[in-house]
Length: 319
Image (cartoon, helix red, strand yellow):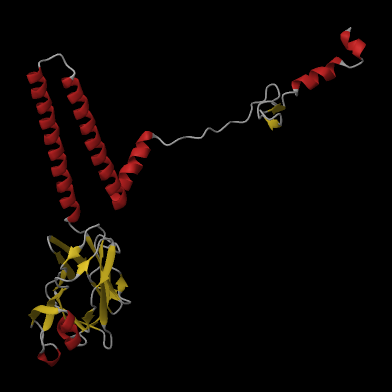
């Protein structure tokens, strides 16, 4: 009867009630969208994506990685830890001293207990100071970590040299005429500690070479060993071991790269008959540091590779 008296159909009024929640009002009185208000019966509503926070394990891993890589973060963490330890020690000492002085023991016992507390606190602070000194020494005297990169211009990829050779009488392999192999050597210190007084010793195994300009080459490199396995040009011996010294005033700072003088392989020979794959050895030295890197060498003669790697691996750009 109420529907007839109002002159409005009942179905329209029910429909308006079903969609009345399509817009809701917030605290300011303005309508706002509600994704679940217009949902029809039997139709699932849209999925509400919840923002996932970082897991505690991920947060801890991120903090540890930053602590390992960032030196400024390490200093802040160390200072914060020391400050908290000293503050907690002082607070505990004050609390124990007050508790002892306000106890009901005799005066002599209270003074004895207070002295024991102060002695323990002093010993703990001395241990903390010793640990701080030890950490400071470790930070200032850490070992470097040097990586090597040797690249011959147009001769293979970095740390993977390939030389074009010519077959001589008796199976001797010599670099092609009018070709010179200049090796660019770079040292990268990936640690936070400087490498002081560095030196590099280069050894040729089953090979020998001569520099394009011996006078300029010997100003940077010192010959250590020679070989007379062949009657080289002008009856001169070939070099097999050379050394570069940076000197006591030379250093490779942390997270920096240094380039060494070029290796000049003007005349390069392979010693036949040993049936071994030739390789280069780089011995990297510094104060309290030593590292040896071996790099295999391949020769190409008449377009064919003489010493292909059996494992078919490629050395990384830095070793």
